[in-house]
Length: 296
Length: 278
Image (tube, rainbow over all chains, first blue to last red; front, top):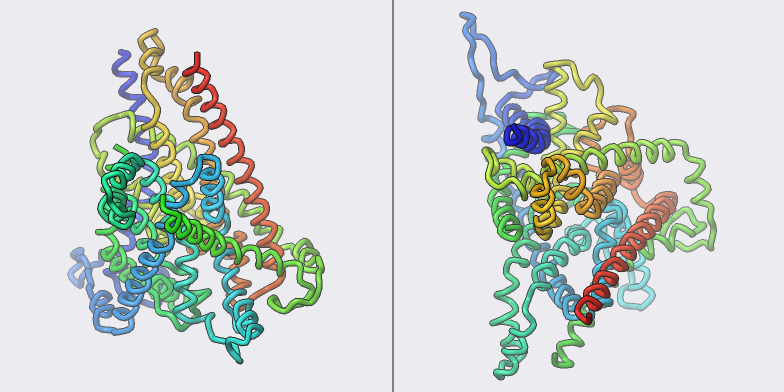
């Protein structure tokens, strides 16, 4: 009896979140997949149904791969995917180069200082993402703070165009995603055994050698987790290219958003989403693999 | 550590913190600018705060955002805690791989995909069963719960992994029913993690623009949607004032929470030292 009660109680604990996720996380993807295989029509809803009837009255299934062919043939989409990948890859590397020494510096400081520094890194993470991007609009504008400073210092005569360029998008991505790089790196480095470093230097290794042969290999899990946490969302980023890149920077998240909201072409927007998902499914599985290894 | 390397680490730390904080400091600074054009200084003034407080749509959007954030955080905390418990304490069960996948995926899923797919689901359901009749508070909240519960689950999961099961086992050895053990032992010990999860879910919801703009309907503007529609066209001094209020409120909250955590940690360390001495 108790066994049975316990089993049903456990079932409830699993089932409630499970059913929620099945309905509101998994099912929506099948909707996207379904609509990506439909055809645009001027009606409500603006796509053709998957199940129709032919002249004889038999049920037919209509699957159209035209949207995907369209994405492949129109060079705009191909270029946008490639450009998104280029921007997210470079931003991830920049975040790693800036974030790694910061995480290392935090780990090597005294416990009290360490807690304060961690708080300082986490704080922007809690602060509004949108407002932090907005802050850069004020810095990078033609009459913005940076241009004012450059002109006042006499480095340039007329404002340098920075806002609405690819440069601004890089700055925005690195700025907003830096804490996502630093925190997993810190979590990984915190577990590092300092005695290993001391052993290496006692045995006569130079600091650079110690770093390359001891520290770097041991922090690979942190590097991978941090890089994926930056790379995956940055590839589909919408707000940053829209606000800081304007119409000049092609990124796929922005194309998807416009295809859906401005052009109301749901089938193409869904196809864009499916291809983006296919591009990111491997990095996502990798992230999950590392995540479950870290948890277990 | 060699002095040269520690100098390198110190300067990269300073650079990183300056990079993270200077934009926000300037944002706050210009909110006190009298001039209509943000980067041109026209003297100190609280003019834009007055404009902000008189704006009714800002109040309406703030109220809606807080309502969504509150309901979202409470549901996400409940669902996320259940999910975390299931993942850590139940060992293997049928469909576990899919479950783990659905818990981790929202953490990294690009927002445009989550937003688009949920909107298409809501529209499909509306055609099929007539619900949701209109989009707004309910649909945004459901969308937020779906990704927030993943964050709560991860926090609860990491706390549970660090907790030994001794107390639970002792309680059930003494005859406590599993449900009592959960209520009297596990949940109280989980409380700090659940609170952290609630706060994170609350902030994530207040902050979200993309998913909310996909799942909202006409007339339901959350605060980020309102801010976004204004700053798309350029800098606005009243938005600087709004940003200042939001940043200061969040900063105060995080510092208080961090201070409480720090004090608890210090107390634990002291207790451990005393235990070691005696």
